[in-house]
Length: 175
Image (cartoon, rainbow, N blue to C red; front, side):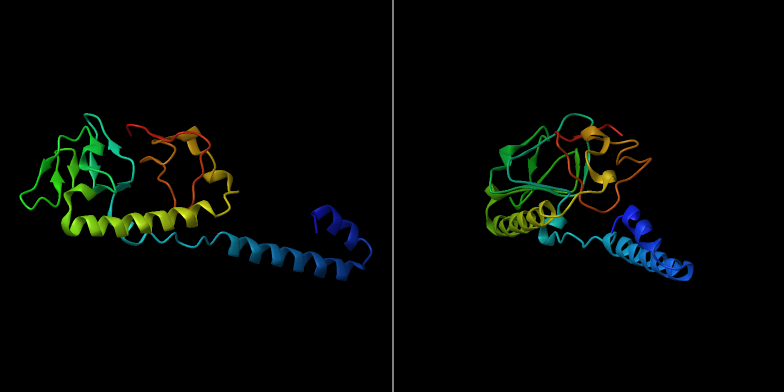
């Protein structure tokens, strides 16, 4: 019932009944609001172990730093560009001065290839879950016009947990 319909309805009742109807309506709206703000967590599984996990590639430029492991799968390590990667003696990961962590690729074979297959499966499941959720909250639609950093997901106003939807490309600003 819309507020206008509610006000028309309550005019038919005595004053004490009106207060009860409005009170029940307000209580129901409060409960509905409280329930709708609790968004279930998108389970990342093994994909959550990576700061960046991609199927198509990861690129960077001088001055960028990544805190955490990165990985590409099912593609080769050559899909990670701009990092100047150095393969470890175990051949299961690479390092870079731009990464505080390790770089993994399916092309490194061995155990890491299997781990990445599982991680990508978890990433796809998480994406399907998140993409299927309603994004009617104005705070999560096209945040910052797709330019994140500063006032939009940066140090002065970090992103809060939730599903963010963009109708444009998303860029990470320098801050």
